[in-house]
Image (cartoon, rainbow, N blue to C red):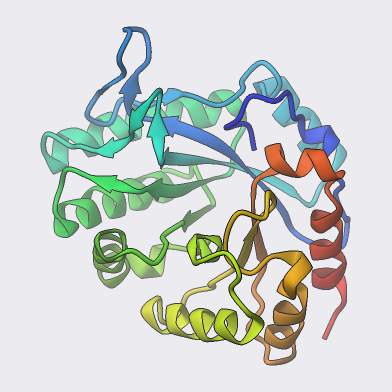
Length: 270
């Protein structure tokens, strides 16, 4: 929520009291936005989401109204300004030190519960990424700053090499895999989706891989083409750990109908 600045608010989104509901603020990025062209800051994170509509007081309010709501922030994302947002650390120790400090400030100011890792472009090798992100998550958890962490990879060789290295070294610290199944081709079928899901479940073995869709319909298996059929099948096999939606900003146009449908499916006990 909040990446596209179309005035979407937490209170716009329907919340079913029978599910655990996570909002993920998008994005916090370790880039400087004050100059004309954004430049990397080696782990010093800044808020790049719609903080006018998604402010600290609004986080407190939605969590106060709904005891089943947690709020996280996502790191990185695809782009910053008109260019790609790169993971670009000077060194593991300096990046981790800056990231722990800057993110602790943001997380405490905004009353947040978790972080999501969504870097998609890299100026560092997989081992460096694994050490930086792993040590960040470990420190934030050990310090009691966050209670959960997720990663948001998609099926791209460079992306997967980085996230699989992270998973291999620090997978036990990662609570959810918000896999971007909507990054597969538009027109994905139910059987293809199930196959992709099983492949990624073995890539992130032992992880809670979430099913996902994009609410503007631009990729992957869409709700219109059988997304919920696939989810029901996964549910019957005890593989449906949750549903990840990109994004609330887009869903606002259709009245969040698929968020309602997702929660209704998840709320039905086995």
